[in-house]
Image (cartoon, rainbow, N blue to C red; front, side, top):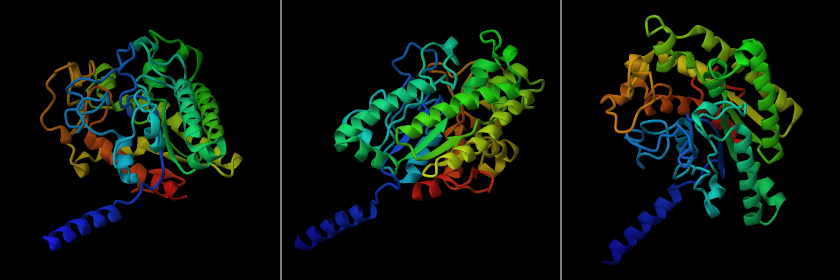
Length: 359
């Protein structure tokens, strides 16, 4: 009996020794429906996903994630060594905030009016206000502002916005006038100007290690293919071109911020390029269907997002898109892994998230 007890104790000790601390003390997430994990659940909004079949393959079921399973930031949190996913701001409280908070909100954009036709959402400025509340709480927990600033300087931040500023603003002339006000080049400049102001606020509130996620190939989403593609396969070029104008300026913004603030380490993640790989070489990633949602209605299953209790496809791991707009867990795993550790020199600039975390 004594020997058995010693073996059990030894196993428990070894388990504790092998469970290393996360690579960063906390992880903060800003964004839209690609990474929202429940912040819209209590809002008066059409942009909600807290019902089946959303979450059908997720360990906690439907949480508000716009996916069948994990999002890219869930994958990144795992790779960083966190033992659980980062909680949404809507429910995070007490000591739980010390490992980070997810502020992302479906339909949110850089511009405050973006997504307003869908109802309530938390724009980038609103997410920053919520983050400032968290920083104040952390200062109270740690004792003072300096202690909080020191702690936050070691944390990781990912910010991914802009998709809705195109899909739910610029390319929606029936609701918004931006397309008649700005050329794609001018609009990208406007977005970057507002974005940079918000990122400066983030820096002023302690952020030092920040990964900016580029806008993906939204002209290839089932919704856009259903509405604007003649053959339902060819991506909508003018939308993708506009996104690339924005992405190129975002990459330049990384250099600008790093040059202006020597203690800042901002990086750009080329979500567009990674997604392009998935579309051009799907078989290499175990994918078979790239132009239709696994769950949806109408042409390309892209007419509308996945409705409550709608039956999704069975082979979800072979689909690039889960619904009209959002990738499957299978696609998110690829994007998350390549954002964390670049497989191609073009995946991240000037370094990947793994290298950023170690600084």
